[in-house]
Length: 112
Image (cartoon, rainbow, N blue to C red; front, top):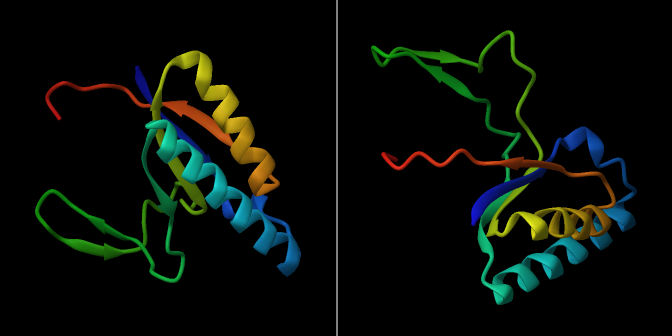
């Protein structure tokens, strides 16, 4: 089985306050189902009120992330499951969140 990252950027959540509360309830329900199914690894969202810092190999810290990269924000869930199930879980989260979800496979590195 592989681990899958299911995610969306903040800009994809164009919802009214009421719709947002519904999406929050719906996504939490899907996560609870994933936990009960034993496929949930972890999840959450990027705290956008805290700016990233870039840490160099020598330990030097610079405010902000990579200047050339798009900002990393939004929410994510990591599930571990067979490939044939990953799209179905991503679709369930997309329906609950009311926005499309990106699905990516984590590369397994046995040294990590």
